[in-house]
Length: 245
Image (cartoon, rainbow, N blue to C red; front, side, top):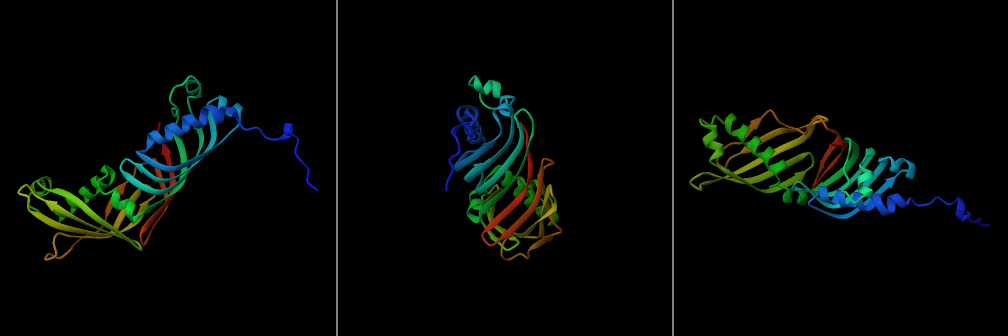
């Protein structure tokens, strides 16, 4: 025997969420990335809370997003205690965050994602700093001449269990080219710092590889990575971060 719930007792969908907040949030999320597919989100909160500009929780899922040149296959995020300018949104203004937002989530990068991200400033800058460190450790007499006169073009990246391999080309001022290979493990030194270790680089096939104790990449105090895993063909990351207005 089935019993129908009276209409008066059924939970009503928030009109504020559906007509005001959802379109504004979708527009804001799309403005934060260069590209995104299959963007889905769910807003949790009562009208009373949301009318004060307080969103208790938002969960977000997206595929094939591009953020600052970095390609991300899958993202799942959840933000809590979000404060927004709802009064201005109701008047047609863009949505803005009023306070930092704590976010937890997971992301997955395929080998093809990293391949497409090699020229992104966030990644290419770190790789350039790494090559600079190697050139100086190799005893280059004039590191400025050795590095600044060269352009570095990264061409391929391979992900294996616990290891990254990058291949590229260094071009100097006279257009002479030198192949370069970087082979490194990737681990967490701290929740805010990535470490490439063990780490070696090779500047042409006829020279032996150079080895460093490690190279660290500081992600900043707003990041807290709890898990980082490299398996064949993909990188998985789980952690927390603060989204700053």
